[in-house]
Length: 221
Image 1 (spheres, rainbow, N blue to C red):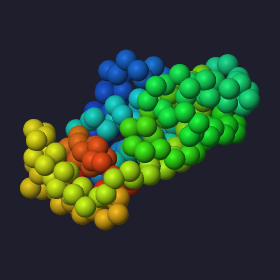
Image 2: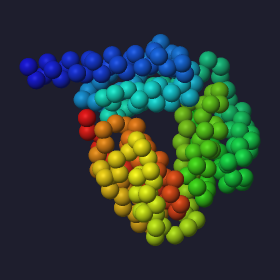
Image 3: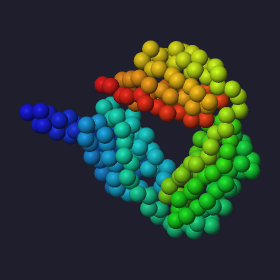
Image 4: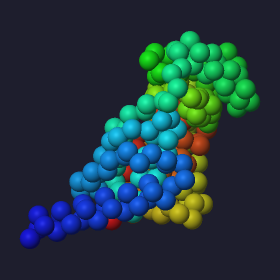
């Protein structure tokens, strides 16, 4: 009986994810496969752009009951773009973003995969660099290896993060424990949804001096 109930639960979750993918306007492909196992979703199939692959993952994580996603979707662009052309587009895209520091990001392209290296002062700059290139035609994957270099002391990082948690209406600060040491923040505890987990991680990254966030938060239904 237990095995049957688990199978039914997996099927119901898979159906919800498929409906969410159909609903999302950024997910156009009809060749995405969905498998569910105890809250873990595996996505397979093909899309035309890397941004659509990310959109499918994001839509899946929004679905109630999803604890984790293994995104095995392959990107197959309609038009072939050479690595040199893609690298030139990536450099131009980075230079066009005012929130990406100049001359701090190096771009490498191999078989459509874009690798970003360098050092920046803030996490939002690292994210902005990735955002600048992830919509480029021909990109099949993004590897963001940019390091965030702390610019201030992390002595009061813990108190700032905990204060941010308390201000967030979507997050119960009492369920999350914060540990901070030399720019690294560890988050421990449990929440009810992936969105709460994401909000906690975003609050941690927004604190000054944070160069790494290790999230050990568990999602408990």
